[in-house]
Amino acid sequence: MLDLFQPSLAGLFINFFDLDISEFFFRPLRGIDTAVSGKLHYVPTDKCSVVDHCNGLLLLHKAAYVVNPATRCWAPLPPPPPRLEHGCPWSDAALRDHCHIVFDPAVSQHYEVVRIPSLPWRTTGFELQLEWPPSPFVMHVFSSATRKWEKRSFSQRGDSIGTVAHLQELEKRSVAPHLSAYWRGELYVLNLFVMRICLSNNTYQAIKPPVDVGMLDQELHLGKSKNGVYFACFDPQCRLRVWILNKLHGETVWVLKHDNNLDYMLSHGRYDPQFQGPWIIEDINYDYNHSPSPIEMKEVEDEFGWNSDNENTLDTRHGARNHYNGSISILGFHPYREVIFLNASFRRGLAYNINSSKLEDLGNIYPKNYSSMQMFVEQSFPYTPCWTGKLPGSI
Image (cartoon, rainbow, N blue to C red):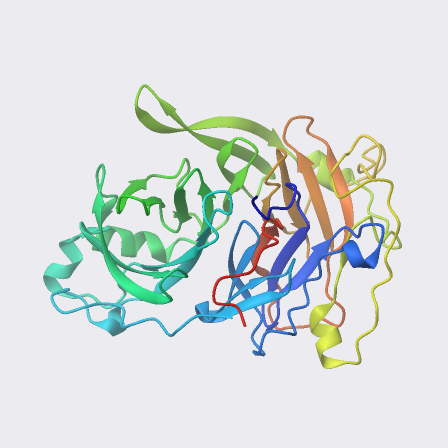
């Protein structure tokens, strides 16, 4: 029998700039024993920042640890090998990389960590005219079954996105984050384009995003939701567009699912500063530097879920502003409902229902005593507890 949780969303891990530890924004359940905590103090590191998540497992700072917060189990990862082997045109120093975790408890108790080289940043001469991604594309993959990193060559399906020179120019104007989504045995990674990686047959495909990523003033997000892989774009005019990745006539295409301007809703929505909301921020960084205090757990009528019909839907009946002048960032997609989570001016967490076009105020999202020269959300990860069994390689 598989050791699985019922599908649910426990909360969102959020990386704020200048904070070493990821915060946890969540809706408490009835009892403190049933809540998943974002406090990872049992892992032997001061850098408890989440770099990726997949089906209940977190990958921590520099791919050093894998953690299951639902069971408080953790496992160390050995240091990865040098990025490249002999014969590659780029030196080790010319490449950066990003690690992503892949885990499907319905298939296996083992997980893998994929180390993907990013676009080279030190290039001269002929290197600028080489296609990127290359084929074969050499990546390092860690398997919990062998407890080792191994080099794998992934062959290309379809066409490349462009040359190194073209993508370097695009990268200068881009703020596309490194995000991932795992869907039906394939890993989707967003950078300057979407890369679909199949670990079962060592192939990859480069997919153009539905919008130009070379625009600094738009918020982009890739994630998994109810029906597959979704892509969202939020522009300065408060226009939110959401696409879903589909196959039509054998072609992989982005299908526009939602297009709506939220300016009126955001500018006329009345936020009550005294309202803490059904969700709370766990203030992990504050507790780490001060004596910890227990979280006041609020009773709720049902298990975690988002339902704007009977909760804190924003009141848009009053207000004088005609244009929303605050900042908005996308925190992620609800994995089981067509809901997208937003962050309004680092103060409020919002949930927007794609189907009903309703916007809900979830509560305060600003960490206690947070101050920095630059305040922004670097990354966020909707956390879904899935696995109750023993984590391979755990201590």
